[in-house]
Image (cartoon, rainbow, N blue to C red):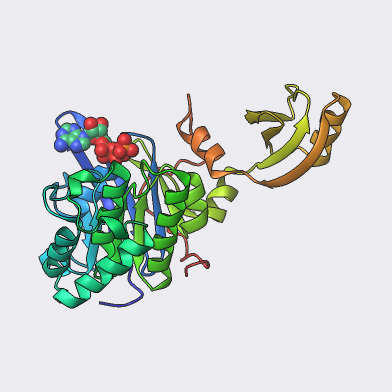
Length: 322
Ligand SMILES: Nc1ncnc2c1ncn2[C@@H]1O[C@H](COP(=O)(O)OP(=O)(O)OP(=O)(O)O)[C@@H](O)[C@H]1O
């Protein structure tokens, strides 16, 4: 297999359940060594796509390949899959469960034990190694499941909402662990609804809408595609409505405004000051992914250039790949 070939290749994928067309001509690639964000609103078909890619669902039509082939067991040991539905053997101890999966993934007993010790230490569960899995909290069980997913250092990680249900401290810890795998050369395809994770980890993204790509490319490319900028304002006083901007986030003393391409940020600042707002901080940046997500999926949402078909739009590999 040519190393320049994408590790995952999906072309003109359709999936129907009865009369319901969930995926309608979806095409995208995941390149070797990149972290790819698979994004979309609830029910847009992300898990369905992953299941079809891994042979759990049979696609209605289309091409779905990993490393140039339909997924089969011979790639199994090189894949770490964290499914949306979590599940471990709950009546066994944490150490036994991790040891069992380690052997299943072809690790020696010593290597699995070493990993287990180091990982539990890292995720602050060292004192729970002998506990039955069902005595752990939901978040703690999820940590173990992520550990099991990465324990044999697979070259491809497919993670379906890996940080779902975690508090901010543990979410950051899990992102650190995923980022380490990425730095070690793993290809990561992850589903997440957390845009801060996407901005931190992902080289390229796809936004799935109506069964196809509403946006696809590097984060910069997607931001450029949607245009506009976000202005972040630290302030005292009330931000008034204005045709120059839309308030997309309003908290006490902090707001984010979405500014159209034709409007100058200095004009926005002037308007705020004239309206009596005390501005203590003012920064302009490209439109946030949160904002883009809301535009695509919000009421009447539609991207500026919703991609009409599978062809063409295959951006060059992202420069930020780690
Ligand atoms: N086996 C199935 N039979 C019938 N419909 C299904 C089946 N699997 C998924 N669907 C439907 O396909 C649609 C997409 O579901 P899917 O779980 O792929 O969405 P998702 O993007 O992963 O959503 P979420 O972000 O909420 O996890 C949903 O409407 C779901 O009801």
